[in-house]
Image 1 (cartoon, rainbow, N blue to C red):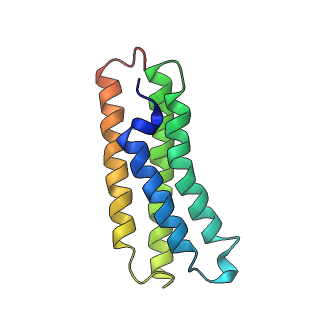
Image 2 (image 1 turned 180 degrees about the horizontal axis):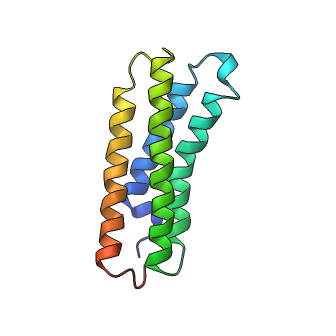
Length: 121
């Protein structure tokens, strides 16, 4: 197993976190403990779960954490759409595209380990 920092999906997720932090910095102050915090936590959860799963002993455990990361990515996608509808962002297209890209990488890695039989990571 590669170190998690060498995985394209982890790198993509880190870039997504940076984009979310930049975007939420412009949100209204009254959202600091609402949508801003939720979006940042969901974003940070993605690379965090990838790295935690990569440190596990088996591919089966890794896949479990990849699914958690995928759930966080979907949660973040929904929150981003809400933020756009509330007019906190002019356009969420770039960030939504990053989320879609990260989700594709997650799904590809999940498929890889499932096809491999998830013996050892």
